[in-house]
Image 1 (cartoon, rainbow, N blue to C red):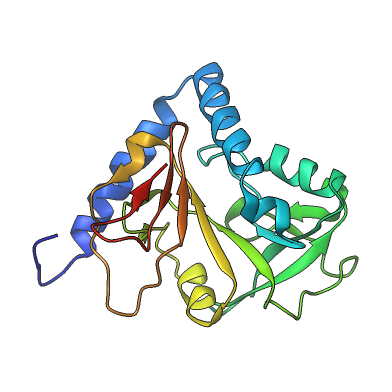
Image 2: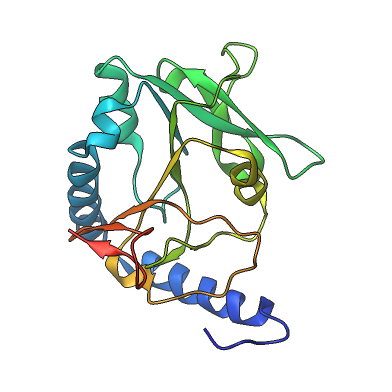
Length: 203
């Protein structure tokens, strides 16, 4: 990516394009893509060996995570979802045992009912599924611009993984020197290991 003085307009243009693509998907087309991504993810050894899954509750334009959450709970895994802390750019994760533990929260996203859920304190062995509007092949992400995951990932030491549609996967995206990339990407057609040379290895 060529150096620019202010990357905000570039990011905003990319966000707009990603949202337009996702909004234009028909319900049946989106479901088809989501099932392919989910199946690839659920067959990865990273998922199979993870005891704790940190995962966002998807909105209508994101890769669907509801089936992944249901499967993980049925598989006996601990599932923790994020709660944005009012007045900050920080978030905490809470364990849920089902969707009845969720309520509409910040930005209309479903979040855990903290009074009913146990807070996750030990992140060392967690697998974190990171949301984004776009990823690049090196694992850098373009989020929604609020900064919650940027702050969290800066301190997170577990495994990280992104779910992404092929159309929202770019060769490279603008990013800062402190941005943390995810280690693997799953699209409907491939899995990319991002820490390999030349922007990642595909399998």
